[in-house]
Image 1 (spheres, helix red, strand yellow):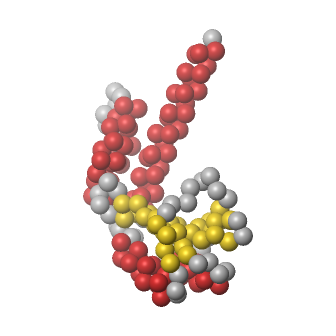
Image 2: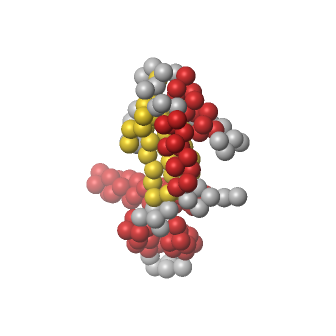
Image 3: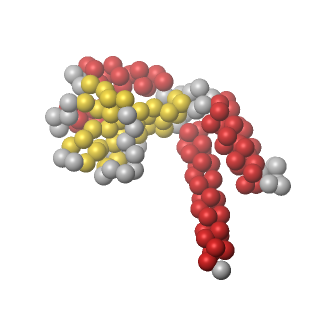
Length: 157
């Protein structure tokens, strides 16, 4: 069964982490640091193995970050998609983004992390709808890159 929100999973994670005597640090680990992503998609409870590995590695804490879909962010996404799709108001991307309104306020992404020997190990949980949301955001970034490249070429002329 696909989850629409990871809120109950987050609650389970908080209790499990505390039960292992580890602390949580609220923080997101971005792309600017060396990371290794935990890969065990076949095991829905792989996050428990991740926490146990952090403890075995002597990590005093885990970073924990979550993302809930905000109405304002979704509205901005839809507006930007309309601008890039103009004059095609029937764009499938716009319809897909509008369909995400059902998930406003729901947690769609959780990241756990710990540092070991200068590398951050990460475990990520995500919902299918959050993956669609990220894909739409990334498509806007790609479109912006194309526009910037065209403007740079025009400036050199």
